[in-house]
Image 1 (cartoon, rainbow, N blue to C red):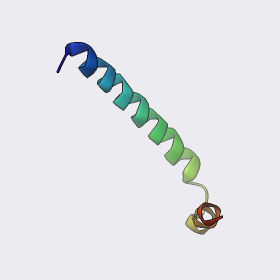
Image 2: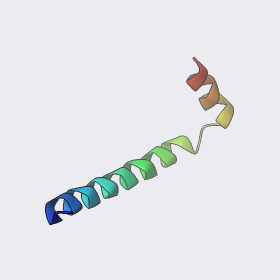
Image 3: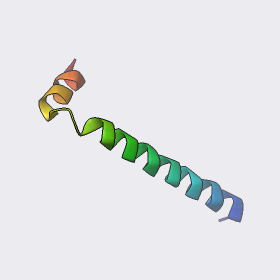
Length: 41
């Protein structure tokens, strides 16, 4: 695999992890039932 592709892949993964952390922080205060209800609709 080219070095450039590897580098972009790594940065993409870091960005995804950051996004995931933010989502979890936002997610935590709300009860699970509320989210499941939202997903269903």
